[in-house]
Image (cartoon, rainbow, N blue to C red; front, side, top):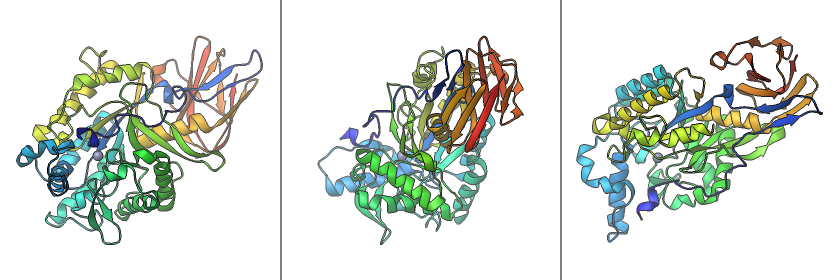
Length: 447
Ligand SMILES: [Zn+2]
């Protein structure tokens, strides 16, 4: 039963083809071959924070509610999931201060760390984010909302992690049921799913947060992943008119992670990206779980999961649970600082990696895989409904002296170090060009 809540440590469906190398177009013999590279020829890094809530420490309530539930329904079963830490509840605060969220968010901003940060809209059923948390100072929720919107949102997508992250809510009464979002709803009732997700997004919308996607609590939706992805896309369209959202459900612990795209309607510019974490939460989860920077990246900068994924130029998406960054003497925050230091040492001149939000990764992969490319002599045409920043092309067998995008010159730079959107550079027989790809038709001239 221990397995029950240890979420997405496997992939239920095959990931997309290959390593997401995406599009390429080959012209007639002797013409340059064009392909889409990673953004700015750098491998995406991203930090996913789960279980972050306004005000409360979700781990504290999860453990308490799970313990009560088990005694009521399965008194002879052993504790499962985080409930094994029931004996440490007196050491765990039931709230995490907004002041700490501000400090954490400012540190990430200074360090250039980007990713996704959950905002559970009705966390543990304690209070609705748009109505207040009975028993907690009103000002704390206000401060939490200010910090999340003004500091954290700059660098992180904000997503719901369903409604409570503990028990399922009955939307007619707003009472908690006996089912669990990450228990029974791993195999969710499809007819209720869209309304449930729409409600989660709407609660965030009510406090001024138009989310770019959702996070599954545990393996929520896993057994009906395709229907779940559809429901997220429908909810994103309905609440935020967002045709290109993402969801985070899966982890890939051994194979190389990809960015699968689902429910693609190419002509309409509609799709949803599945963002896949590449390793375990080695920050410490509740604050009392595995906490070890070496599992991400060892001091020698070679061992660990991140160097293996980065070596293959696949998106390296780290996953951590919010409580550990504060609880137990900020054990997870210390690990994050060490991991970031090592990642900086791994890529000292910032030529190999690029920190991105989850939504930016999703949209880049859509542009890469769902745009039409054609080459005719010196001209390369791109037609797309999937815009993205930092769109990066490689022209093999062509050392260009000049690159123009829709008639405007890209600036020539001398090396990868200076390679940005709006520039190009030449390495041997190859030319690399980067620019912000707009929806519609784009013409590149390489001469
Ligand atoms: Zn979670």
